[in-house]
Structure formats: C-alpha cells, structure tokens
Image (tube, rainbow, N blue to C red; front, side, top):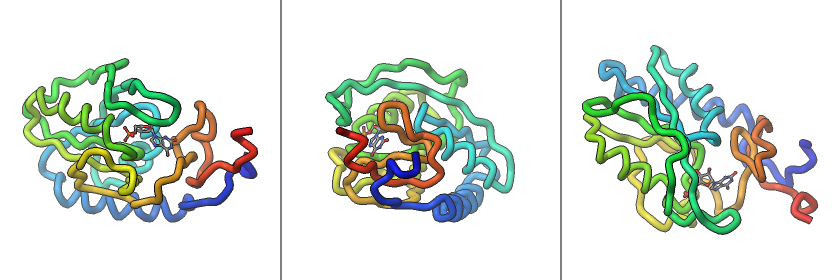
Length: 178
Ligand code: XMP
C-alpha cells in the first residue's frame, strides 16, 4: 500500500513533532480553562489521538460527524449532522480539532452551528490547511502545516475510505485512480 503514494508530503516524525509543539501552545492557552476538544469524524481521529496524548494535562473530548454534499472530492458547504455532540457546550471553552481545511466550507458551517450554542469561546486547531483552496476565510488559531492544493491521504485522511492507516501524509500515485 505504501507504493500507492506518489510522494510523501509529511512524514510521521514531522507530524508528531509539530503536534507536540501545538499541544504545548494549546496547553499554555487552556490549562486553566477546562477546554473541551471537539473532533470531526472521521478524518480527525489520529490527530485527536496524538494531540491529546501530547497535552501536558488531560482534557475531555467529544465528536461530531457531518456529511457535506458536493460532487466527488469537492465540498459544497451544505452540511448535514450525522452525529451530534453528546455534550452541551453552552458556556464551555471549545477547541475544534480538524484534520484539514480545504475550501473551508464544511468548517465554516460547523463553526456557525457551534457558535449558535453559545460556548464561552470557540477556536480551531487543524493539522493541515490549503491556503490556495480557501473559499471562505477561517480564523484558525492553531495550524500544523500549510500545504499545496493537492488531494492528500494518510494519517486519518482517506481516498474512498482507504489509506487512513498510512503513517505518513502524501499524494496518491496516478495508478490508483485508473
Ligand atoms: P472543505 O473543502 O469543506 O473540506 O474544507 C471538507 C472535508 O473534506 C475532506 N477533505 C480531504 N480529504 N484529502 C482527504 O483525504 C484531502 O486533500 C481533502 N480535502 C478535503 C476532509 O474530510 C475535510 O474535512
């Protein structure tokens, strides 16, 4: 399966080193705030797992799952909640943990939805961001890496539900599509 990658963009070591840095920053900002980490299924599972283990203290987590209507690999911004949070976030400090911000349309919708529940604060941490693909401006407090506008897989990111298990993040080889 490793051969299905065309080129590696980020190695496991680079990802873990950056998550360690982000965890330190996050704990500096939130150590006294009982922050709730909110992950978006399924892509963020590994980011959440490694980020929360890198935190110097413990923080609760919750998950939501959404489907984004669109064609192929493009999202439309029209979102439906498949699984909502178990937690009432009113008055809570919330940090959304994301795998990737591409167009930003999905996260823009999630952010508006969660804001309407009146959290004490709402910030975003994303491992990856594609600045060239942005269709909306998302104020993201913690960003792992800005990457080129290419479809990437691995470390929780999938192509047709595969490749989430790859330890590195990379682009797919052309033979995978044909
Ligand atoms: P948007 O465009 O709304 O992205 O910011 C919504 C979701 O689409 C997925 N996504 C990707 N998944 N490689 C992937 O495996 C990619 O390059 C990619 N770009 C977007 C991801 O779940 C994101 O939250």
